[in-house]
Image (cartoon, rainbow, N blue to C red):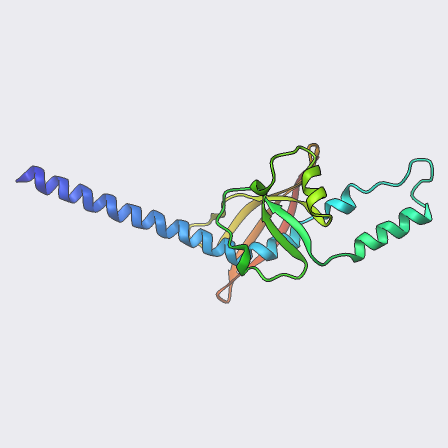
Length: 179
């Protein structure tokens, strides 16, 4: 009888701990969903601009280079960003004129993202997000964001978030690395 009781107690404790873990994962996912677009807006860099260089013979004052760069700077609707980690993101629910989000797994890996640029002329780069690490009260959090524009081209950020008036807001964005 004691073995059955012990087994039952252990089983109940295991089930309760699984529910707590699942609820934390759901909490973190819900916060991520709420701040996703805000985080992208605060950290993204347009690959088309970041990797656009003038003709070395004509230099940065070349009128054609300046015109093309200005066109790219003004072309901010429908930029394609690939998201490169295994998070559940329902891209259909994200409403943004500026961005179109795709899973990085959509196109076979290519170090310089040439296949992405060929398929999507407005390809702006790849973003990846860490899990959100919260304080003990789940009122403040931080996550890392990586932006990649090619094999040796990228940026990293630490994003600090806080719950204010029942909404999650970005408090600070800090660049942590550049390549």
